[in-house]
Length: 167
Image (tube, rainbow, N blue to C red):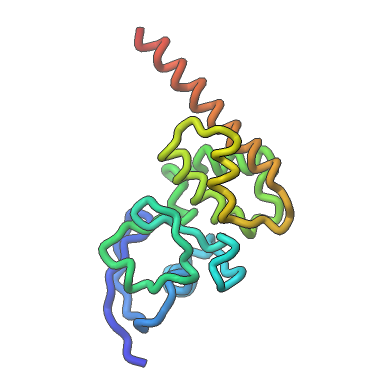
């Protein structure tokens, strides 16, 4: 099959790639860019393990053509890291055992990142609703919710401290 040249912006870097027009974003990320955080699990868009953000919106990379993402900002779980260190959410998942086997974790993290960007103080129901598109086969949900709540509590405490220091 004939390949076409595309430009993808992934985790704040631009890549020029020659790919087959039918190549899925998940395959480009994993095979061509060696970004293996996003996982192939169901291949029918029912589990969320392949979730990445495209222009800040959680999307399933196992059903998206890579070429359709040209001109958009793609963020994978690898892009969450802050200056080479773990993001607060990544650290909290480790601290609270939210990762379990870790297979679904990248997809969950990308969905949680979107949730917190759009709702900085979600209720338990809002968290559960946002995460309903992701499946954990280890049933580690309670640890994930604890990790998310810890991040929210730390952010609220930090915000309160900033307000006190600003006075």
